[in-house]
Length: 156
DNA sequence: GCCAACGTTGGC
DNA sequence: GCCAACGTTGGC
Image 1 (cartoon, rainbow, N blue to C red):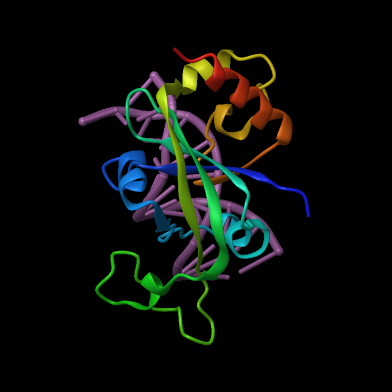
Image 2 (image 1 turned 90 degrees about the vertical axis):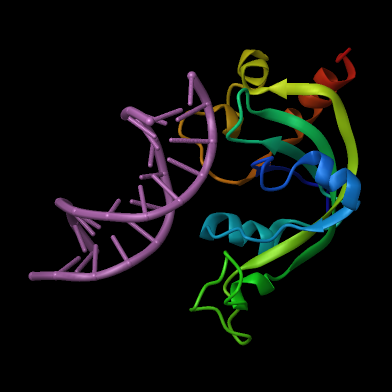
């Protein structure tokens, strides 16, 4: 199957590109939205490319690249009452929530900001440039991926 | 901090 | 199954 591409949002106060760089690999846990869950469980595969996006900062934008290293498996934080992501409806038999693992690839020399993306021809239909787009895991088309790689190669 | 957009919940 | 009320996300 062909390699696919995704955009993963994270609030840097919660988990930043520097955290991923330091750890090398992480579980992408805590996603509690069914649309995103379905992608994590069914569609996101090892080798897929990930745009690491910082949200809820001024400006928001893409700060790095990562790669999926493990496909979907149950998000155990949903089973842990101590976790802030605990979900009392989740059980071993029906974990409800899923996560993948991602591996650090690179940190961009500087952020590709959301205004940069909105200005870029070819990204008009990209999900993250649409107003009100709150999904924390978003599919990225191969054309959008190529456009962004070209933007990255021109940074600095 | 505001608030628009969106998802979820629950009464009917 | 509809939809109002509520909660959350996230850009600004």
